[in-house]
View 1: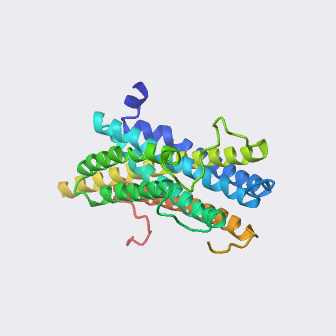
View 2: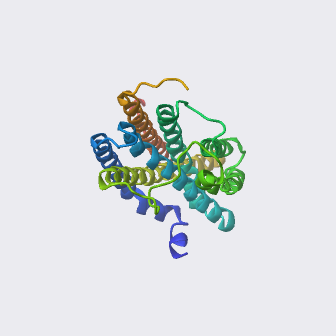
View 3: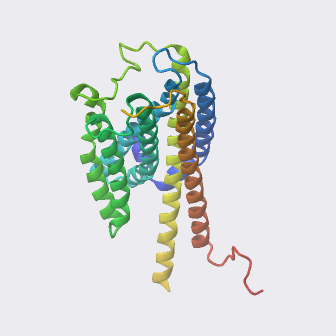
Amino acid sequence: MAVMSFFANPHRFMAASKWPAWIFTALGVALVAFGVWRGLLAPEDHQQDERARMMFVHVPAMWLSLFAYAFMVGASLISFVWRHAIADVAAKSAAPIGAVFTAIGLMTGSIWGYTTWGTWWEWGDARLVSVLVLFFIYLGYIAVWQAMETPQKAARAASILCLVGAVNIPIIHFSVEWFAVLHQQSTFMTTDDKATAEFKIPMYISALGYLALFGGLTLMNMRAEIMRTRAEMLLQRRQAAD
Amino acid sequence: MPSVDTDYSAYVNATYLIALGALAAALVWSAFRLLRARRKLDEAENPASDPHGDAEP
């Protein structure tokens, strides 16, 4: 609560976020580069041969697409209940980054699906379709911010959309258990996890890199949003004075 | 089921290129957005300044 109150002031947020935005971004770039290098050097899997290397890109992207949405749900809830200005900015700024991770997950998953199942897309697969719905929710959320007349109305409508869309998150997670799907069940960090360090290290490095990039880019976009809002406010004030 | 080439290198490389391209695009877009916002704020805070240097002396 104290942290939430502290960052309710945009000046304090701007002062505190300047270096973390660049540090997280630089860390993310370094970790993603290291993850790519380790991923491409990983040995072939006995079942999936070199196709297993696609997992080091696809799986962390899907983790981040869900994490980004969960972050937006938290921020939207804070915005909706407490009308916290920075929470609005946080959710709005995270949306395009979350959409990028979801797009990466969909495209790389489609390529892996083609090499494994022989099809780029399967409409009967609940995991694939629920992730596509998540992507459309991201686009809808971004569109709501653009479409409303005032930022206050947009924040309210976008928060409601985000909170309603949260119902899709457990559907994505449990779709492989609830429905008959082509998509394999989760294995990482479960009791069936038999992956060796050669596979886990690039996976976790990539995931950490994606997470750091998400943090850095979201902070950058939040700072840009606050600066843009302040500039528009100053210009409007000047026009009113003239 | 369509036949898929069993040499998967091109598919693996494509996934890495798509991910790196998308992340690079997100990074460049965010950095440009931040720079544009900073320039706009500077202009709003200092309306007398002439950022392009083309004003009459």
